[in-house]
Image 1 (cartoon, helix red, strand yellow):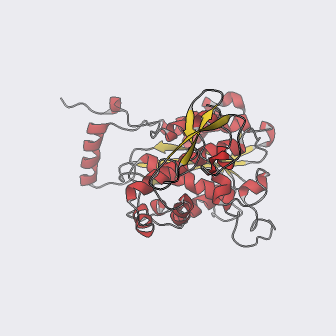
Image 2 (tube, rainbow, N blue to C red; image 1 turned 45 degrees about the vertical axis):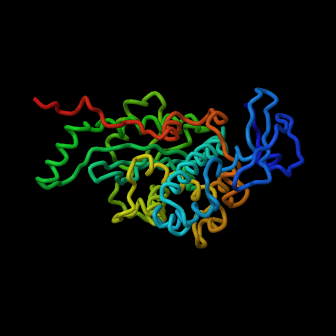
Length: 367
């Protein structure tokens, strides 16, 4: 079925008079919310029928409030439970809306960035947190523009627990690994190789683009061994350096500060932590949408960047002309089939699963 921006034309309901070259009117149906009748259409190409609400964000969601209200409250640091109370709805409905918005963000980000080339230095690092329990830590690996502060790409990496543990914690961890296995010790390396390959394909001139990263040994192995043929230019920065504006890793440090400040699930001490890895990915995706397209680079004026308080990272790259509002970014509902250029990992996220899951082959079998 070939649809193109139906929400701007005859998706407006039964009273709409515009016709599209790819569809014709195909009767009406009544609902409790619209007893006067909802218009249906038929695709001229494939013959499939669809309703006027098919391309709306609230499609199949039986809610009477706007998704923009959820998006605004969630980025203010409220938990899903509190947002449900504020909007007089259920927490389950909030989860559905969150999933829908995160999927649309990945699709719209892919469409907007499209075939654009990367012409600036990149900063790469992982944001550490946990999902479900502290025995399931993870990294969200981020590739961010050094000057624009634009989040180009990210992926999710589950980790095994590390650090000092008590005897009781070691016993519990052993029991978990016996039942569910361990995460792959190569997860960071595999995820880094995946995201480096994607970013390198988009770089306009590889000789003039440098990857800035910390001294993590897995990053070094990817560049020197796994992707040796790409000749990636890299600079390592010690984690002991002052994390201020002069730090080469400022772009990723700045994103880490904002995500921990704005989202309840990423705060250091919180009861609103993500209960599943997919929920954590969805939270980060909503943050990425606001940071890239709706929020200025800085809230105050900056000496070396005179326009940073009025332009978004997307404006700095030239892919947006102004800070986008909610409806301007999300527009009508997109479909995965209409965005074939979305990468493999992001499609897995949209399906509700994650790569690099626990590997049972590493688990100890009882004798």
